[in-house]
Structures are given as structure tokens and as C-alpha cells.
Length: 471
Image 1 (spheres, one colour):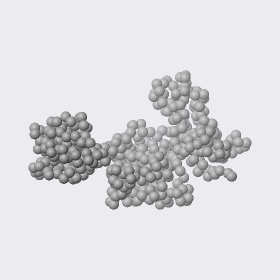
Image 2 (cartoon, rainbow, N blue to C red):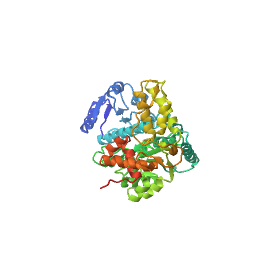
Image 3 (cartoon, rainbow, N blue to C red):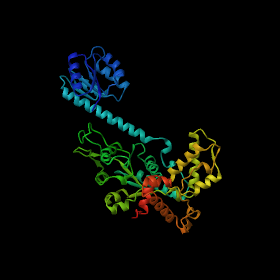
Image 4 (cartoon, one colour):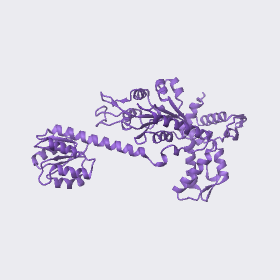
């Protein structure tokens, strides 16, 4: 662990010995011979920790400590004195000293105390950063961010309100885990934030981790933390995101990407509410609400042996299924108007409006990428539009199957697919997927690009329809 120390000590020999010892351990170190000089050097050196003698000429150590705390309440200070008394120790701790050492000081002990002080300060700083992140913008908090007046969205918001009410009535223990399932782009993170910010844990941290974005060998360390020396690059102790979420919510996005070994540890967390850092022999008790999200068919993964059945049932005790945008009648137009107003202000075009034809085209499109795709299309239209009215030509919608009018209103009659006959929308979608994959020799990236959808969306549909390459 690297850091910078400032030694405020009026005994030159002791100050020099401290400096040499710390520098031999590859630490940066500066020294000051009085409290006044030390206070001037703090702004210049910007130390991570201060070693402060109590018996100084001029300002006493306690006076310097008080001024240091006034300047930077987070800066750890270790007091050192040759005339120890209980009252001095009490006064130092009241003023916020990290520790109090009596001369003669063991240099090895001094470095251990400094290491611990810097480590705890950095962990506290990391926690403050995570809590600040969890606050986010007010637009992303609570169920108010879940737009849409369709019956599907009203049912989903009612389900959310039931879970929040149950959380408020809970008298002991942590609330049950929640599993959010939905296609890519349906707003799973917004639902997780709504559960947190509308509920009794809103003042606690909201910590998010995307399980698919981290290398598998780092997921466990990120979640549960590690002790120094637990593995090759573990040069210092680090708390995990589970501990950082203590008192709040841990949101595990793409939980289906976790390896089986990590799934076992997650199951233990849900059952015991305890976590053990890598390389540690002790468990830490945590009070955390776990919310998981996935777009993958976990039931099928359980049958295939790639996802633990006991973890699935523990996560799925409370489940929220997000409707795809194509199943939310009327919401496309409503969302398009909100997104246009919001995006147009960002790009300095506040007077933009939709043409009737453009809204009809948006309503007729299938939206395989759901709300995220709609938001991206709106932003692209705002950028490209050269007139006050956004028309069909500004939309640049990808070539993907449109939703038949009957299907948009909940009926399921046969629809003309363009594939040479009458078929249902799922059949048409399956044929289009097979056609694109075959044409691009099952190169998922190229097929997704040709269909105008993301790779994640295409992979989800491959799993959904159980598509396999033909010989």
C-alpha cells in the first residue's frame, strides 16, 4: 500500500529515523520541526496520514490536531508523546486522533498503525463515493421514473407498491430478495431503484454491479472483498460491494452470468446474511437487501445445470416480470413524446414536435430493443432533424418486423409476415431470426447488426426460440 506521511516532530533524530524507516518501505515521507511548519506543509504535501508529536515548541500537539481536523476532517492523525497521561489520550481521541502512541515508539508498530489508518480512511472514502453514486439524479429515483399508462405498467407499479408496503411493515430481519426478469432495455435498473428509493432503505446506499461486465475471476473479489495477500495483486485489504451496501440495497444486474462457485456464496449470503472476504477466516454480518435482474431464462438454465436451483428459488421468492414495450399498448407514443421533449432541450431544440406520420410509424414498430432502443432512436432523430417537425424520414428505424394492429390490441389472429404466408408474430420473428443467422453463418454480431438490434437482444431471442445452427 502506497501513501504519503507527514511527520511533525521536534526531535530531529527521531524524525529522521521515522523517515528512513518509512522510506525503506517505499513510502513518501516529509518532516516538520514545529506545529506551525507542519500546518504550512499540509497544504503543500497533501499527506494521506500525519504523525504528530504532542510536546512541540509553540503550538501544542493538541492545538495542531484541532486545526488539522478543522481543515480536513477525513485526514487521519496519529499522536505521539513522551509523557503519556490518560487525560492527553482522552483529549486526543475526542479531537479525532486515529491512535495514540507512547515514546519510545517501535518503528514497526508505527508503520502498522499508519497502514491501518490509511486503509480505514480509504475504505470510508470508497463508501462515501458509493453512497453519493447511489443518490443519483432525482429523475432516476422512485417509481415516478417508470413512465407509461398501459395496463401492463399499471399492474407492474401496483406490484412494486405491494413490495414497498411489505418492506415498511417488516419488523425484523432483512427483506426477501427480489428477482426482476425482462428483455434487454425494459428498465430493470429503474425498477430496482424504485424498490430502494420508495422503500424504507432509501437513506442507505444503493450499490450496483453488472455481473456480465467483470471478468469471472474478479466478480467474487468485487462482491465479497479480500484481505491483503489473498491473491497475487491483493496488495491491501478491500471491502466488497456487499459490505458497502450494508443498510441499503445490492443490485446484481445480469445475475445469470455468475459462475456456480460465486452462486454458492451468494446463496450463503441470502441465507445467513453474512459474508467472508477472500483470504479471511472471519465472517462479517451485513444487513443488505438483494435485488437481482436478468434477461436470461433462469428456469431453463437450472434444468441445464448452469444455474443453481436453490439460488433460483431463493431469488425468485418475489419476482417482477417486466413487460416488453410491444406489449404496452399506447406507451410508445407517450414515451416518445417525453423522450423528445427531454432530448430536444439537451440539444438546444426545445420547439421540436412529432409529425402524426412519425408517431404512427413508432407505434407500428416492434421495438425488439424495448425502451432503450426507443430512447436511442429519439435521440438520433433529434440530432438529424433539420425542421421543427420530426418526420418519418428522420426516424431511421431499422428493418425489423412491425407489430400487426391486432397484436397491438391484445388479439392474436394470423398476420401477413412477408415470408410467404400467414403466421403469428412469434413465428414471423423466429423466421426472420433464422434467416439472418443463416445468411451470416451464425455470426451473432453480424446478424444483430443486420437486424438492427443488440447482440444481447439477439442472444436472448436465440435462447427464447431455442435456435440452433443447421448442418
